[in-house]
Image (cartoon, rainbow, N blue to C red; front, side):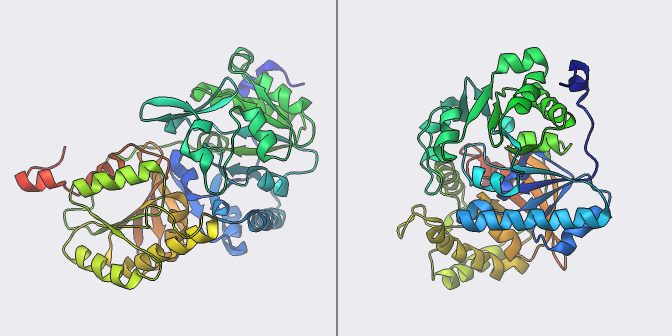
Length: 434
C-alpha cells in the first residue's frame, strides 16, 4: 500500500499523452488550449505522438450510436492509439469522458477498453454544471433547486433511461448486475484520497468505485487516490464527467468574457437538443427578435433559402429540429431529424462568421459536416459552454458548443450578446448591451 505522503504528492505521472475519448463534444466544457480530434484517422493519431501535446480529446460521438457500434468504434480507436504508441516507443493514458446525468454506453465502452483484471473508477460529478455526488446519489442543480438525477428528464432519456435513485443500484441496473462501492465524502477528505486508492486496490475485476465529490478539492483528492493505486500496480479503467477528465489530463478552464465578431457578423444558431432547457432558451431568443426556423425531414431546401435571406440581412439565423419527435423515439429517428439541420448548415457554411450549436450530438454532426478534422478549444464562454475554433481548409471558424442540459433560460441570448449581437432593446435605443 502506498504511503500517505506519496498519495498527497500524487504519485508518479504517467509518461506520454493523455487521450480523452469523449462520447460527445460536451466533454470540453472544462478545458482550454487543447485539440479535439474529430477525424481519428491513424495519421491524425500519429501526429499527437509526433508533437509535444500532453493531452488530446478524441471525439468518439458514441452516445449517438447503437451500443454494438459504439463498442466496436471505441475498441478500434484504442487499437489505433496502442499501435501509434508502440511505433513511437512511449506510453499513453486513456480516460473515457461521459455524461454527468448518467447517459451513454458507460459499462459497454469500459469493458471494450479495460483489461480483464482492471478495477473501474467512475466519477460522474461535474462541478461547473452544478452536478455533485453526495450520500450515494448523483445530484443535479436545475433552476436553483438540487434534485436527484432520477427525478429529472435525463432519467427518462429516449435511449438511456433508468429508475435507480442511488448510484450503487444504478450500476447494477444499467451494468447487468455489476457490483459497485461508494467512497464517502468525509472518508475521502479525512484520508486525503487514500481511501480512493484503497478501494481501487481492494476491488475485484470490473468492480466500480465511485468517489463522492462536492468541490474541486475532492476532485484532486480522488485524483491522488487514482494515481496512488496505479503506482501500486493496480490497473484502473476510468470513466468520468468533464471535471475529473480535465484534472486527469492536467487541463484547466479559461473564461472568455467576449468573442466580439463585430456588428456585421453573421451567426448561425442550430439546436438539435430536445431538453426542457433548450426549448426555454429558444423561446427567450424568439422574445428578443430571433425566431426559430423549425426544419423537418425533407424540408431543408425551403429552410436554406430562409436562412440565407436572414443572414444576408446581417441577422442571426436560428434553426432547430421539431421540439417533439413524432416518428419514433430511438437514435435512428433522432438522426433523421438532425440530418435536415446538418443539410442547412452545410449549405450556408460559407455565409456565416460563427456557429452556435445547442446539443452534443448536434455539435458533433455539425462540426464534421462543416469540414473540420480537428478543433482547438479556446476556453469557456459560460460555465459548461466551450468555444472551439474549427480548423477548416480555408479559415478558422468560431464554433460554440452548448450542451443540451446546460444553461438557464437566457443562456443562448447571452452568448449572442457576448459575440456582439445586440438585443431588440439595444437596437431601439442605439445603446450597446451591457
